[in-house]
Length: 367
Image (cartoon, rainbow, N blue to C red; front, side, top):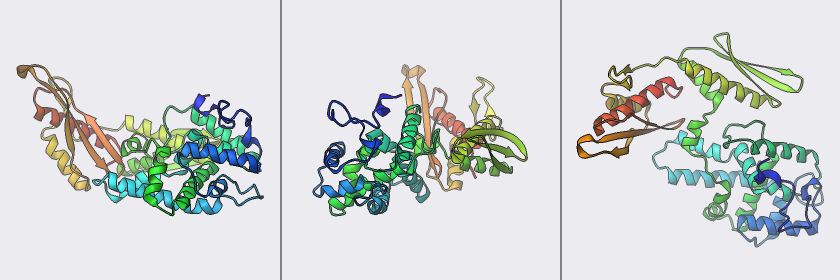
């Protein structure tokens, strides 16, 4: 297992040597004082009212003290608004749909559960529900095997209790600082890093949504069927009645995501390239007047105009070589593509625009 997740149920021995298995049973009040101390260190924030943090670290199964349920209520709203303010100010060029995508990805149950795992919050929670331990341990092990953050579901469904803890801790801070939203963001932002960007969403688009959008564009009918085999949920994707791909998991939702990913991969590989021609001299994809055509395409879709940037500028003046990239922002994310090497900036930009047009026609991003 990745060392980052290895001590999810045990506190660091170097700092808490007599506290080895705190969350395999509920925490006594005396130990809760030490738990508050260590969580404050993680947050780099000292509470004026430490009872707020104690409450944020108390599950409803622990009946001897108030649970985090009330704090979770306000934490959900406070984090949502703080994140909304951030993306609104940080990305003035994005429209409402793109901002909504960013907000949803950064405060989803999936994202917040991984925040809880990364910072080890669960080990400080007092509870009397041992069934939670197995779920959290299994999820932590699954996350440790992932190469990248899974924006739309990894190998197993995230336990909601983990996201609840993060929201409750955020709420405890929010109340303790007299509901100062800007200060909450300054304290809490570091815990959410890395912040999910539009580029991340483009690399991991919502598979089911993208599958239906792609097939709708091509005039095809999608059907996803489910059944169970022992403990496994199996989802199969059919397009126009023909089987395309299947996925499985113990969770029905994850099985559906896996099947949609596999189906998208197969369908995109066999889609035709529209709107372009091959340059007979070097076999590279080129479209005459691609920059203007791409500009018109973005205008038609009501997207921001393309942004070009020279990524490579090499060689002596009489043998210059240029490579340009082009970036566009659609409601589904930001797409950036590089063109082929050319001897003129104009041609390099046209090559990048040609590649972008082809990519858009090969993907489900055009309605």
